[in-house]
Image (cartoon, rainbow, N blue to C red; front, side, top):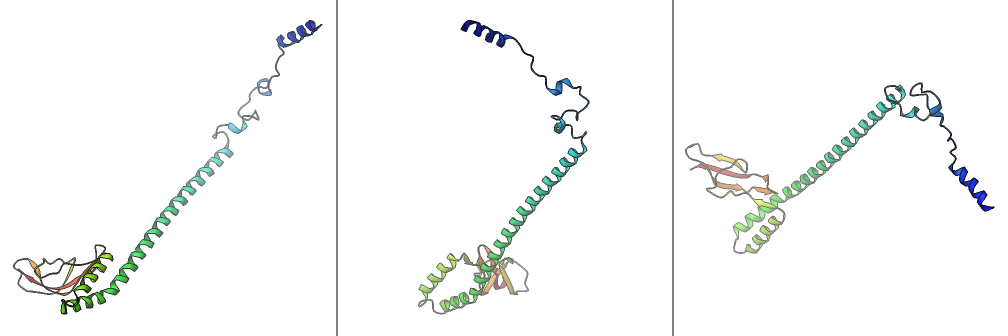
Length: 187
């Protein structure tokens, strides 16, 4: 009995049943909008609504990219301004100490034997602040970027050299903080 049941079961498996045909294949195609499945994938030139949405999407992406670029430029500008303000504040603070440094240097020149340890401390402090004295020794070539000539000999023969340093000049982080005031002569 099991055999006859198995055979019809076998027969039903081997007998092909026609598969239901999808609606797409039975209906004739009348264009891109005839099928509900293909209505969303039509060419953008044939659907003005999709074309409009694609254009809006492109505009929004462009706006977003411009906004990102503007924000990045703004952030860089703020960072630059912050750094400039920081440097300006440092320069202003160090500039306020220059009269004190000048007075200390004068006192050390007046009593070099007594104030030699103070000179070493002053030099060490200036170095730690990235502050250096502009070379304005007698005979040094005059450089208008570093020296401010208070007086100059009328004789224009030879090169211009420093005759006397009146007020020392300083470089702060390799930039002129104060030019040295000097007298210049020709040599």
